[in-house]
Image: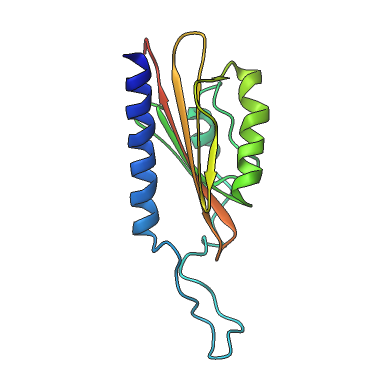
Length: 156
């Protein structure tokens, strides 16, 4: 039963990620000049965005690492959801979490981490039977990854 609940949570988080991709335009069109030089793309993150407000970092649970260079950080729903953007690619983000999560008590559950095209996902569980779902979406036009982390506490 617990496995099905974790699967439902993971699918819900993936659904949210796909909706966000759709809302941001997915692939985007270049707004450069006719020969393709210059211009910006509609999917580029704002360049004047501060890395993150320190008050947002204070709300992140201690067992949820966030990559250096994170921006557009948002911690919501009583710290059960952490969202941010980071420059780079899916592989870099996945490697970061594969290395950092065991050190803060998260272990792999059945299944494997998945990266297909511009979307990646991973699921972990800790000794308290809490669940962690990380979904990633790479934007090739802006060379950034949107990271959505959902935390489900067994005993909140």
